Image (cartoon, rainbow, N blue to C red; front, side, top):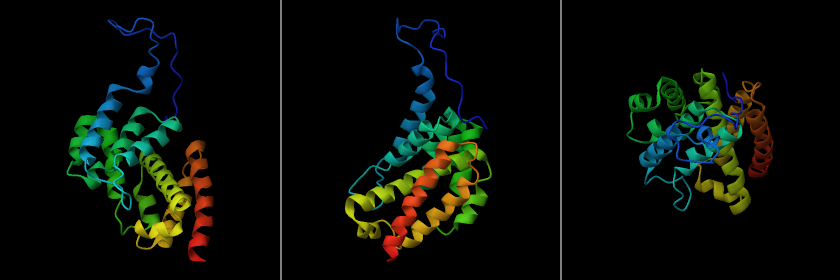
Length: 214
């Protein structure tokens, strides 16, 4: 799958009727109307929801962070849209069919796989097996990078004991994340940015796990 595309020429012609004068239109590829629609759609769907264990941190910051992680790795637009919407069907009243109708079959199929693979009772191997498409595996990898990063940052900022506010069994949750990171990193050979991020965070996570279990 084409994750990183060629850079747009800065001399590309402006759309007819463009009022931008001397404004360079390279930004049109970086922040599109479709991305804005997905961001607004996700914000409205998650409005009122907060991240578990936080003092009112809006939930929309999580899928936004996932999309930012994908963007930093050079992801194309469909993946960024799927990153913004990856929790919508799981955590809100929005149906998968609505996502596919508004954002297309590729985004719909990716979000459907991520929703199916999101059950709390699923093991890490089961989750990895359900992520059949490369798109779903890439979005899940970015999601995992953000989740692991949040755990590490929370522990550093508030202390390891704070993790008990987030998870009933922090050590078990961390072990599950680390196993999933190992399984997903094996599928990211052609995407070194995401693979490297998972490996680096996994090493830090392993050190945190040792500290928690000490």
